[in-house]
Amino acid sequence: MVKIYGEAELDEKDYRDIGKHLRTSGIIIYPTETSYAIGANALDNSAVRQIYELKGRSARKPLPVLVKDLNMLVNIAGLSRREEDVISKFWPGPLTIIFNLKSKKPAENYLFTAGSNSVGARISPHPFAANLFKEIDFPLISTSANASGKENFSDFDELNEKFLSRLSDLNILAVNGGVLAGGSSTIIKFNKKDIEIIREGDNNIKKKLICSIKNKE
Image 1 (tube, rainbow, N blue to C red):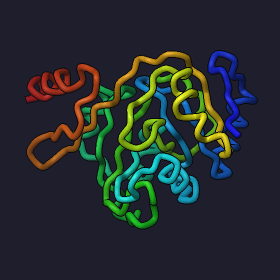
Image 2 (tube, helix red, strand yellow):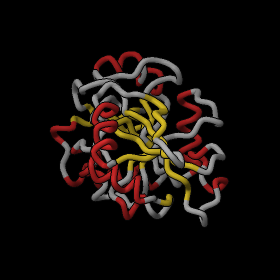
Image 3 (cartoon, rainbow, N blue to C red):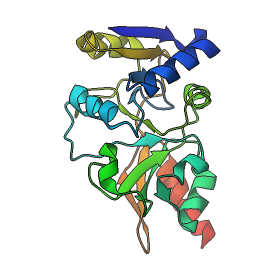
């Protein structure tokens, strides 16, 4: 069954319960600064497998994650000075950066990387994520709460009607954050000489990023 929490009514015990749920391979639906996301402990391959299955997503496609801070990020990824500079300007925020996995972290250890040697991560400015990370010490999967290839949901009532209603036989915790800003994060990757825009989100980050790079030069 799907248990629904109202975000405005969440207290410390609720966050502890959600954290416990995640530590036992549980799945959550939660609000972000853009749209609703599906989450699980990114280091728990059993939970990650459930997300691939319920979304109908190809296991060859990686899943992005949220991290609490840079300390959590460097446990799984290597950082360059260029990446750190952009992070300092745009995180927390709707900017996902594709990092190289840490050399001592084989890709096959992590189902969410889909066998690649990289990981897409960001720090979310949404208060739900900030409060949840007080209870968990692992990266959180943050993929859109929808069937793979379908529309993102920014309105919880619509999400509940069109997506959650199909998941009634699964043990999922969902957080109703009302109507969100919508859209998706911008995704970038640092190459040797430039920055590649993998996906341009519904925000002004691309323009700000270009300005930031020019000012740096």
